[in-house]
Length: 77
Image (cartoon, rainbow, N blue to C red; front, side, top):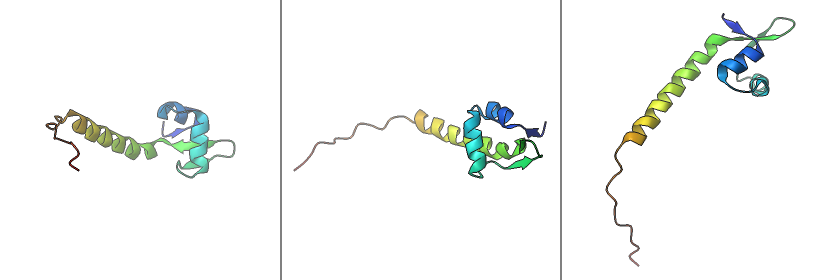
């Protein structure tokens, strides 16, 4: 299915329907209004999820780096 209802989009994005409605009002999610309901083009989220995956990988790489040797942070007034 290429188009989702607001409810289906909320489930797909794992967020409340009110949050999806808010994003639609802020024009952050594009919709088509068919006369009775907003339909959301599912493919518009692919880029979002790709960026999210890249970010997760960067964070994992950062967290897996060894902690540097403890440097002496004594105050030398």
